Image 1 (cartoon, rainbow over the protein chains, first blue to last red):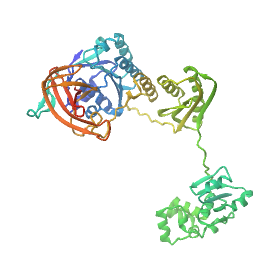
Image 2 (image 1 turned 135 degrees about the vertical axis):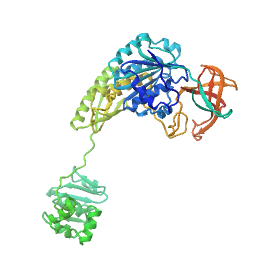
Image 3 (image 1 turned 180 degrees about the vertical axis):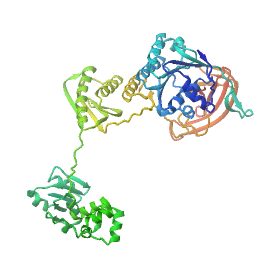
Image 4 (image 1 turned 60 degrees about the vertical axis):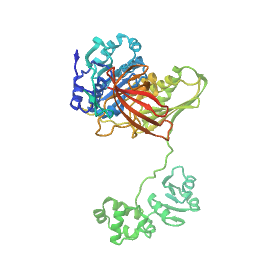
Length: 184
Length: 377
């Protein structure tokens, strides 16, 4: 099922959406957030983690490309003290293995697997059975397993796919004194 | 009888009489003596007192010069001449004593017990019993700190991991049993193999042998010993055990034991420094600074390390992407930590590229090079 998700780049708009983000993602299932660069996909992921940690849950972020920005995440409301961050240095296989271990450990509200910007060669090495294994591992738990990627990866194993459309940048001011404001 | 020595060398002098010595402070030592030792105590070169109670001996040794022997039942008489200030300080009660005209211990000890208790409470009554030399308490001798360690020197060095873990498991079982008998738990674990010590800190106090053994196993997997093990030493650092009150409505959290083991496995996979909880600092350094309160931040993704770029007025090239610059905002100049080798000095720009993405680029002003730091997302 593809669902539109009304969330932009900025953290200031989605305070209501933050709680909605935590509510709408199904527990015990795999969800995917896909989109191109600057589409707002990471904003959705941060909103989901913020909603989870805000409820007192623990979350885990498996960051395949070391892309996580703690500053913008904290400004959205992510409680960093409840977020386990695993940096995989570009190794997608390590990322999958780490996510598997975290799901097996249990007790997390959200386990986020960030595979955005991963190279096609790295993604091709992921066996399709990995997603079936994830689906089986997570289905008996209250954990939301979220995959962030450039395009859908989990296919039929995913319960929900959020496709983020490309957005247009909003600059204000007169050239050359422009200021980046938002996404239009 | 109790003996008290008050002087700069009290600790050493007291040790020559008894192995069980209570150090009241740095200069005052109390211990028990037998009648045979009275003569030896008398010749100690310090202020010494012998009394039937420890507190009477302490008061006399601290406040009376030379050697003082207080016969049993004579404590109030001998101590009575001392000033009220000889008692443990209590500003509030001492002010009351001053108002009542009580100047010496004799004055205090002659007050009726019931009337004193009703006016000054238990603390006042305790001070009066001290003044009379009638307060009895057991000796609290200092005890040497217990070291929870096991060691072995092996005739045939261990070459394989399995037999090494078997030996460590035996040590752990003995040590945790000793900790359990003392109602303690392990806060950390020091393992010394052939003289090389490695420390494993446990995130919570535990006596779980399986957990401690797994931590050691993961450590040995990540960092194998240099050669066959001939000397082995294991020490557990004791601490108070963990006491947790669970709540019905507390959100589920990973079990600490399981989480630590999981993180240990992941550390073995991705490296020691790549697993943990993110932390921001009180700095302006890009990527580490805490967000300013009330400011809005666009969600950002880093390219780590930053992508080297070639930039002209119209286009940008990197090894991953290129495109035409549609809009650009900046520069914002920032610099800091000039006294450190990893200082920064750069001009930042936000730019919209023709691929539809919004990047943050900067020019490092020292090597005059352009980098793409990340993408707004």
